[in-house]
Image (cartoon, rainbow, N blue to C red; front, side):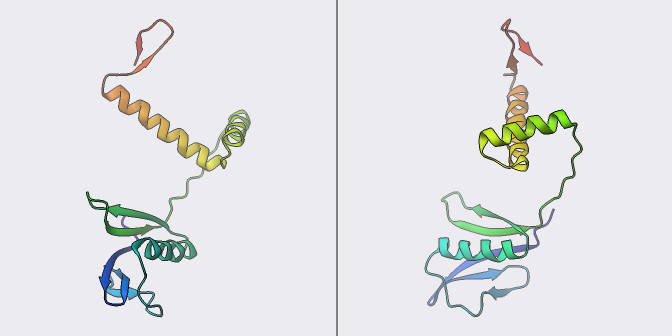
Length: 132
């Protein structure tokens, strides 16, 4: 999905400015330049949060900010059994997470398992055989 906004950071005499790449204008025109990339990123994150957007920072190989993308979140409606909801609630509480964050972490773990399976690692059961 295409980002709602794509920004880049530009250094100049007045500090670091945030430029909307597609619309070619400075964001935060009422402010001067920012003192550091981190301060500029914080401002972009606040801007995105106010608009209900999620921010991701794309960095170059050497760690500098290449661009900042702000996207609309994808809303997922999920129907589950009461038993699964209870399990999810307990896991989230144990981990100190929201139920949504627990689901996201579970999906990340599932991806790790799927990647291992693709590399031929698989899971090992109690008999020491790969379960595929």
